[in-house]
Length: 208
Image 1 (spheres, helix red, strand yellow):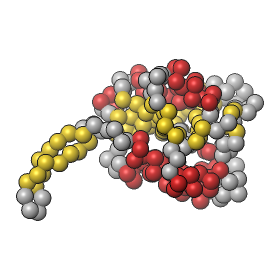
Image 2 (spheres, one colour):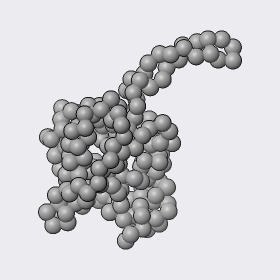
Image 3 (cartoon, rainbow, N blue to C red):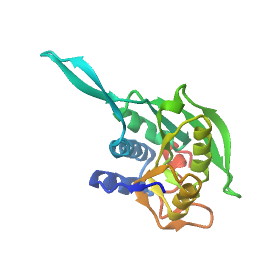
């Protein structure tokens, strides 16, 4: 079974308090989601493989290490976009794919409307990014598609999860490690995480 990692760093928890607050404006919300994206990247990538190369410093030749594989960020549109810049601040060479999935508000089932991956995704470390792991439907559908394109080293990176979404993702993809900042209490009757932070996409882009 995959591991579930919950981040408890004080800086991350401080920023989470800001984005949970219903009175936080769009600009501040977006900035803090972006900053959390940067902070969680260090832990998510802690075990990335490296390879040794030889370089020349101003003084002499020496051995050094670089990443052995490319990193591909796959945000689930549209809320996942809010974390991409933060991750790329830490890994500026990361490529970005996109999966557009919307959740039917009646059935809560995911529907795909866009898909675009960079060349070489099958050899890369893939970070599937979505701030909210609620029912798990969108994350499962996206990871299905990433695997169909040959990727094997895949991690899910989010902000807020709940027991129902984590279980659903682990049941369907037991090989995928899950990284979140908080595991909240539950889903409500309309599929929102409680206490959560509301609709992350709407709050990121000011559409409500």
